[in-house]
Image (tube, rainbow, N blue to C red; front, side, top):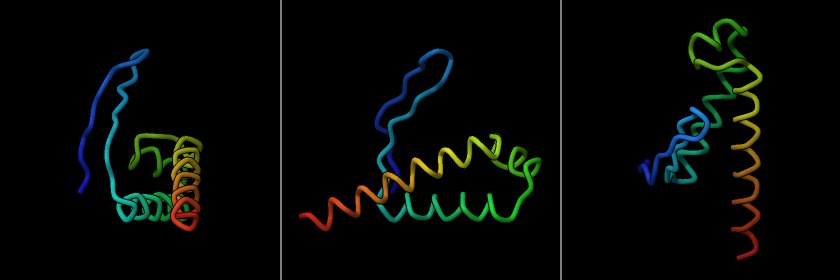
Length: 76
């Protein structure tokens, strides 16, 4: 279950530190992938409150995180 660790504002951007399970992060990545595949730019902006490019960048960060987490698990 997701848990908020901390919150701070930097240059008028609210930054949140959260704790999520690997499964929760995987579900988030799947939801963003579906959003990008099934919606046009205007619908993405309306639903996500972010541009297609911003959502793609977030998804890329999540996929990189998941890839590294998987590599760490294999090494252990």
